Amino acid sequence: MSEIAANMAGNVWKILVKEGDQVEAGQDVAILESMKMEIPIASEQAGTIKALKVKEEDFVNEGDVICEIE
Amino acid sequence: MFQKILIANRGEIASRIIRTCKKLNIQTVAVYSEADQEAPFVSEADEAVLIGPAKVNESYLNAEKIIDVAKEHGVDAVHPGYGLLSENGDFAKKCNQEKLTFIGPKPEIIDQMGSKLTARNLMKKAGVPVIPGTDDPVSDTDEAKKFANEIGYPVMLKATHGGGGIGMEIVENDEQLEKAFDGNARRAEQFFGNGTMYVEKVINGAHHIEFQVLADHHGNTIHLFERECSIQRRHQKVLEEAPSVLLDAEVRQDMGKAAVTATEAIHYTNAGTIEFLVDKSSNFYFLEMNTRLQVEHPVTEEITGYDLVEQQLRIAYGEELNIKQHVASIDGHAMEVRIYAEDPKTFFPSPGKITTFEPPTENHIRNEVGVASGYQVTPYYDPMIAKMIVTGTTRDEVIEKLRDALVDYKVEGIKTNIPFLIDITNEVEFVRGNTKTSFINDYMKK
Image 1 (tube, each protein chain N blue to C red):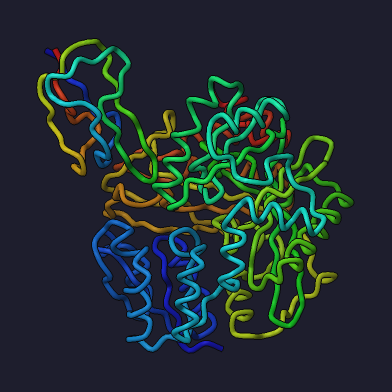
Image 2: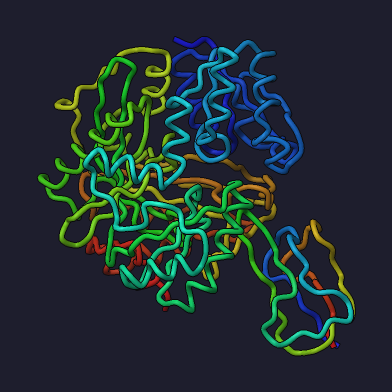
């Protein structure tokens, strides 16, 4: 089990996956929005999304966990 | 002169406008969101009114609420600043309908210039050179590809209603175009309510040089020379200066004339900016017109000695321009840096609490500031927290002074782009004046 974390502080604009989804390495799992900028958050590994830790419109800090992947 | 105005903006520009109002004995009403309760501009205004939650749609973009506040507080006029509602023709129209003078051009002209494609076509008609591109919108990827192959890659995909670098992207080939087109159209739709796209040729090695214009309601139009704004990241300006080292006296005169022609052709009034791209052979092309005060207006104020906000207020009040073209001249050199709350390497936003905020203060330094020690920078607004303008006799002298001032600029608690700005002042190509729009990509990605 590993975690996908936010690389900047901002609002969760879109979540692109749901629990149980298979993702490839490099696939975007969420898009953060901050100060008029959108930053996609990609998974570094292939695997299954185990748990989503945030929902759309949540505020996250840099380093906060977006989801868990296995 | 106006007795009382409302400032429909926030941050450093609200403070900047309040300062000129104080000089002219005009009362000010600030409006602010829940996220900005502690912001300096709120306490600097004579009156301040909370208008809603942090999100811009519920506060700073809430035109009706802002107009209600203006009426309740008996103001004569509304200054929109830059960004937010400043280029919203409907807002300007509503202000005027309620007998509140909108400090800017007529609503129809805001709308015309707000569509980049309409602006292009109007300028072409007025005889101002424009960048080769589509005269009409392109409806889909295939149409964009067809045109791109006709004029040759690289091309710039642009949203007709875009701004701030949103909805535009350079693409080098069909594959990149396919990837970029829909995303940019969608973003433009989301940010500007209009996802119409068009295609322009990329002018290689170009400088972004813009001319400040002023036009009154009595038929007088002048320009106050250029600002060189080529140093950009994500198509957003980072450092601006005036004058530009690229222009000799003859080109400066030709461009100034073209800027005045463009302004007169559309019967523009108040302060505006004509943006041009200039290639290395000094060919210049109309890029767009900004129908408002620019973020970087202070560099023009520093080299010409005129207060542009004062000029805006006087023009809006109906006074005749008191500056004649032949009297306006350039004295010295000025540079502005934008201090962004962002990671200096990735340029990602860095909201958070500012624990220490101490800009340097010396005679040659002008600070325009939207924050203070203890202030919380939120993710809701633009990442620019302050500007610093440094003035001197020569460009070399200004670069030296700017570098020293940046080293002394103290911001703690959040990340800022100050280390990146210092790197720019140390870059030999910058010192040489080789500041193309591709500067950051060409020289700063080491």
